[in-house]
Length: 334
Image (tube, rainbow, N blue to C red; front, side, top):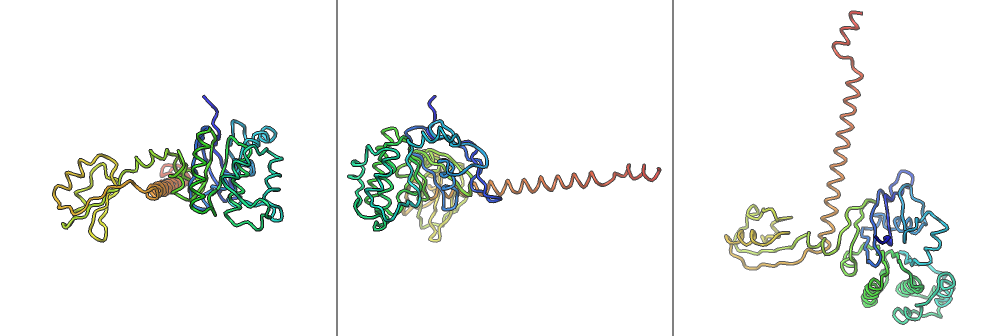
């Protein structure tokens, strides 16, 4: 069995009493476009800094190409095969784009520099301080890929790119995946995950919510059916096992999310006149919120269970501290 390009096991980072990330565990095989999805503040950037050895974990391990990131000597060799696009690329403002790339070429090489500059051109002879946000981002893309890395770790890589350049970048990433490059794509933009990623890990509040194939995630999340009828729709008629969610909209239409076949739905609709029937794939935004709602409910259940355990332990302690009637009688006899 081949070694995963990225392997994270129990990765945890606390800043004092504040949780950065806790108990993250997943692996990414070589040649996969892997999405890392969560809102701002979810722990994505902390995970990336841990993965690149820029932070020391409180607990757990991370490996790239089989090498632990805390094995400093061996990991330095691995970093020569890793590309990185930070969330806010920063370069020396007074240095030109050309000299900036020359500097990084001296560290890791630049076998693909010209090819990448043809695809993502920047004004090489201007100082970086004169660059727009989009040109800074393109410079970061060229710098991250020009040494032909095996693994690339990216934090919000399309920020500042115009829509046409974004699409060109997505196509480039697919080509890199087909060449066997592993891409770790951290983003808060749901559409990007669906556009380019094979799998996605969803993170919230520093904890892993799910790791799913994109296609499986969408398929398991069902189809959205909207029914418009001149008749008053009774929601109870549509509460069958395949129903994930059902509600009556303000305009009186039925909105139903179903994961099964449509036989039960067709039978239920037989008693209604139908003016319009629409079936569409679940939006990834809805899928995302479904996982977040599940995760929140699980945490609330865990908190309730912990509180119940604590109350139970307190009750046991109180019972142990109070003498039984028999003990009281023995004490009185004494």
